[in-house]
Length: 165
Image 1 (spheres, one colour):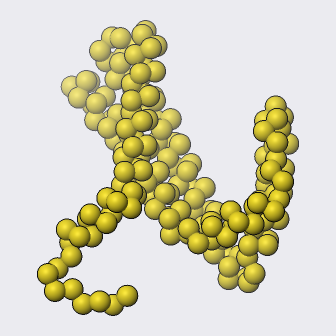
Image 2: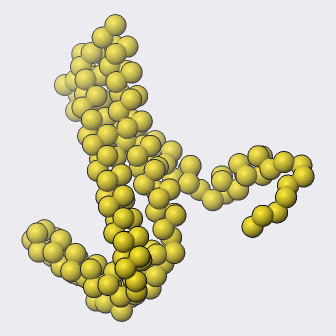
């Protein structure tokens, strides 16, 4: 029974990693226009040197300052600013939910190996986490792939569709 519970727990934690990631990616697609504007404007600003990662708190502050200036230029109205801030909050929230699921997945992976008395093999844990992480990333990116979505739309299209676009 312990093995069954460990397996079910790992599956649940993997789902808590991959589907919040998928949700965040879907929301990013919805805000693609804003991101495109942001990307165009960001070219006008010097990038923050990666060397600042040697002092992470400074790097984060410099990136935040740069991002705020770009966002200030990208948004012209109060409504656009609110939309951009809402997007940033949603993206951040889904990112952290996904990270929490990923961390819990690592813990559940160890617990699964523990039930089979192989927890001492760190490389097995690393391999399992890499495989599960890769599978989760593949799942999320596969589901938002435009080609896949186009195929699904064709499958669902009725024989006599009325155009409303």
